Image (cartoon, rainbow, N blue to C red; front, side):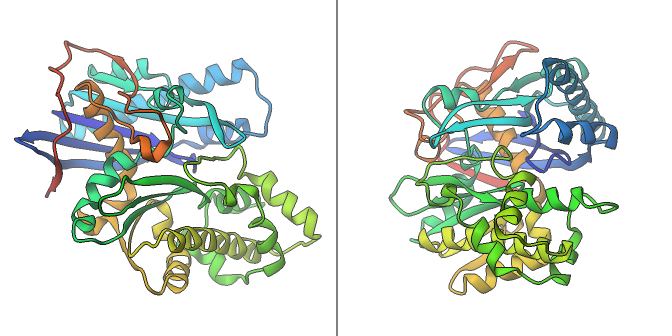
Length: 387
């Protein structure tokens, strides 16, 4: 079965796409990545999307327009991928998260937009969407969902007694920790690129992100501001937990600047926010006793962040998911391809020990293009990525 996975993450910069061929061989699920790419949002879509994000108040008219236009953007990206790589049986779309409702450490709801009917119309494939809600309805955080892939990707490392973890450095940093003979755990750590992108985008005449960590490299960390930003109660909450730009947004940084009375230059501010990610991630990794850390996401392209993680975690082997056959830039899209494959086969796509749900749940709403395949009784024991 050929599945196209697609997602726009909390950086809100575009759509990551992966097409994966899945084939069951006895107790082994074989996966071959046949296409992966990233399609940036056009400025006339990204700008109104960012302007509508929390804490901005918006009406249903704005939500309707964005839901339609993002759905059309996803449809165009899917159609382009199919034209380049061939037809697909299933598309699993994460869509674009615009609000993740958390109160008192509990996720009460979540909203991803990008109307899936446009994707079904453009591809003629079965479409799986709204993949987080079932987990939240079952008492989970609805995040992270990448542990479905992470646990299987890390299995060869965990088998020899190694404590291994998968770290995603997107807008928000999240981690999946696998220990031998123990249920895996996962949680959102805090901001990764979200705050850096927010202040860079807000600066007059600046870009939308810190390309190659150039601003961070040119700046100096401001310790007083760093300590203030690390004082958020979120960092001390126990797992499982989830967060997003509802908390870690431009106002979060402005509040810290107001409390400290500081007015750092843009390079110093970006250096401080990069250090915020490095410190919060390294603390989480160290507390979990991780020995091998497998990183992915846009943050791996930031040499300042990756260097600081290595310095703050001297006893930890840090690699990227590319070393395990999973391209680091599109690992989340691959994960959602796997979720789509699971959903159409009637298999659970959440990992309850990671999200806090009361049990496994089949994820997503399905727009069928044809009769679904026969259900599979249980997950294959092993996932193997073939080149």
